[in-house]
Each structure stands twice: as C-alpha cells, then as structure tokens.
Length: 194
Image 1 (cartoon, rainbow, N blue to C red):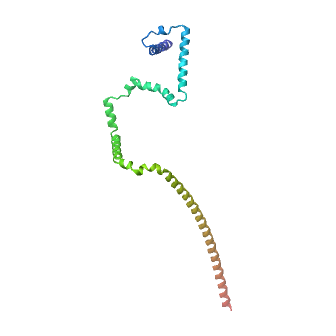
Image 2 (image 1 turned 180 degrees about the vertical axis):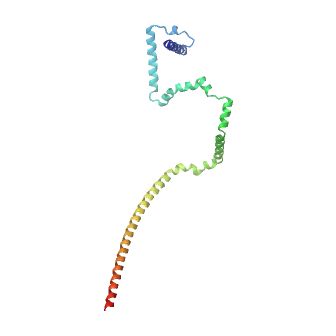
Image 3 (image 1 turned 180 degrees about the horizontal axis):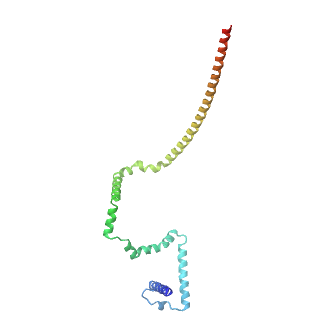
C-alpha cells in the first residue's frame, strides 16, 4: 500500500515536471520514446550543463547568483509572499507593540538631524586624516609609559638600597652609642674609685 502511494507521488512529480518542460504542446511529437533520441537529449543536456559550468568558472558573482536561484524562486512564489503579508490588524498590533522602541528611534533620529551640521563639520571630516598622527602619539605614549615604569622600578630599587644603608648606619650608631655609654660609665667608676 505504501509502495503504491510513493509510486503515485513519483508519477505526479514526473507529470508536473513534464508540464513545466513541455507546457501544453505534445511531448511525444517532439521527443519520441525511441532510445536514440533519449541519448541525444541526454547528450544535449550534458553539453548545456558543461557550457554553463565553463561560463561560470572564474566568475564568483555569477556563480553566487546561480546558486541563489532557488532562493529567488522561493521569494517569487505566491504562497511564500502571502505567508509574509500580514493583515491590517496584525500590522497594527505589531506597531503598537513596538511603539516605545519606535518613539525612541524617532527621538534619536531627530537628535541626529539637529546635529547634522556638527557631524558634517570640518573637524569630524578631518578625523581620518589624523589617524596616523594619533597612532604616532599613541606609540610615543606607550614608549613613555614603559620608560616611566622602568624609572619607577629603578627609583624603588634605589630607595630600598638607601633604606638598607640607613638601617645599617642606625644600628651601627646605636652600637657605638651603647659602647660609648659603657666606656663613660667605666671612666666614671674609675674616677670615683680613684
């Protein structure tokens, strides 16, 4: 049963293709069912396909257009167009749903229109010319930041060295002060003993 249905579907598709190819003319008059003409027809179709392929090779835009023909056929189909069309009520509901967004876009467009003279000003138009200068300045700033970073590290190292030396001097002075105090105490004790 399923085989009969698929056979009927296949026969219907073949009939539709024949209708597209031959239209209302008699197909058997131009293309009889003998084998020699079938081969000739297939060879002709192959030759046409080869000519199309040869003419499209190296032409990217034409090849891309050729590939988009099924999509174009879909857009030209009345059923697809009717599917896309909305009723007036549906359009109205769509507009009402997008009212806030459209109002915001309208306000932005109005601001853009008001600032058109500023946008078209000489200063804004000169921006592309100044890109090279800006890039040069950016590279100089990056180089200076690297130099400052190196200088900061060197200063930090020198400060650490200075702090280490001052700490050592402070410890040495404390030791000398303790030694001096002990010597003074010993000298006082000797004086008192004499």
